[in-house]
Image (cartoon, rainbow, N blue to C red):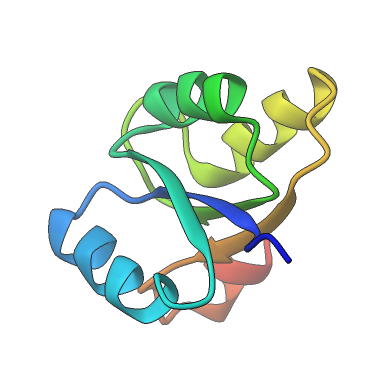
Length: 92
C-alpha cells in the first residue's frame, strides 16, 4: 500500500524540519513551501493527498491557499497549523 503523499507549507524552516521528522515514517513528503505562492505552485506540481498549511505565511496565508486550490479543483485534504494562541484568530 502506498503512503499518502503530503505537501508541507510553513514559513519557518524549523517547523518544516520538525514536521518532516514526525511524518516521514508514515507519509511520503512530496514537497515543501515557505510561502503561500510556493504552496500553490507545489500543490499544482505534486498533486498531494494531504496539505499541511501554516495559517500565517507570506504572500498568501494557508486559508487563502486552500481556498485557491479548492477553486482550482484540488481535492487534497487540508490540515492547518498555527502557533497563535488567540482563539478569535484561529476560529475567525
